[in-house]
Image (cartoon, rainbow, N blue to C red; front, side, top):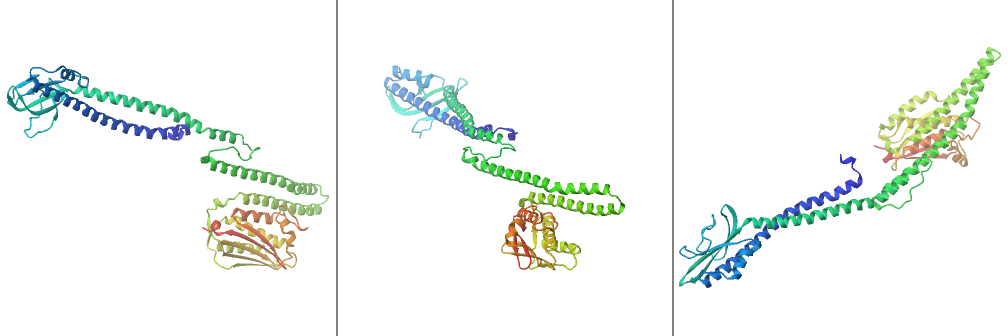
Length: 457
């Protein structure tokens, strides 16, 4: 249920719930402290009254209490106080004849005042007993003065303290809740501004967010800006691809249609067969171009973070070479050399085989009549996996290598889609690597370099 709460409500609860717990603890502490305070205040008042009564009885012989003492008895802690004084022989000297029930028996060794709780006419009372040596009417000894008061007065005093404390704490919590509620709203205003900035973005507007934001969400904004930049590049690349694909496919499709019409209008069966062969070849080239366009986009869509499949690179290369030998033209040898076992690697084996096929196809297609050997080597060194395809054909001049990496580039009149090296470069980039093309004399060397931490498991 808390997942559906707003951020404002979550922050408010996070702040207020600990405060409520602290308030409960403070309330319990205040209750205990109030009881202790009430006990100390009332016991001190009763002791004062006991001393005043004992002094007056000693002075007057128990006949009367002074007005000052009577005032103390009537006003002590806001309630009536009862008392009596006993002589050493147990005879009452002054005060109320009926004592509370449950007063502990006096101890002869008791030197100071003794506080107690008892029952007086069915009601709980608290009192103090004071023993003092004095002389009244010629009779000397230890006289016992007892003073008590209804306990309800103490409870009322405690309740009053607790009520005031709860009102104070409750008022503070309510005030703090209001401050937090509106303060969080004010604090979240930059997030609302950020939301507004995000809502303004669309497929036509992916510019970076430049609004000032709190430090806590600065990372989110930077991540969003990176995402917007990636989306912009992806959309631009997609638009560029669609434009180029439409341009490159227009002529092949038009050629296929023209040849199809030529077959349909052929004047003789022999002419129809000849034109049909041309149509078949044009259809194959169009299908190859379409397939390579799709492969290029698939290669660009692969993310190094999604390469979870672990394969044995040496096995993948051996299986590919075995299957590809039959496709090599007569007089051209295909050699595979693994200098050191690269072990288990994390990659897309299908796309890796596609890259090798494109490189070998390029070597065969553009190597010229001097081509006699294509060598593939694989090794792991200096934290990299290096796949190298080397041929002894006519090669590419060094100054034309950058153009050869461009899509749909045609450096010669030979057939081809012009997507071989761009596809291989996209596959290398999708594996976190790079493509290096080096002109040899004779021939060409193309190397795919992939970092071990990306390619290796």
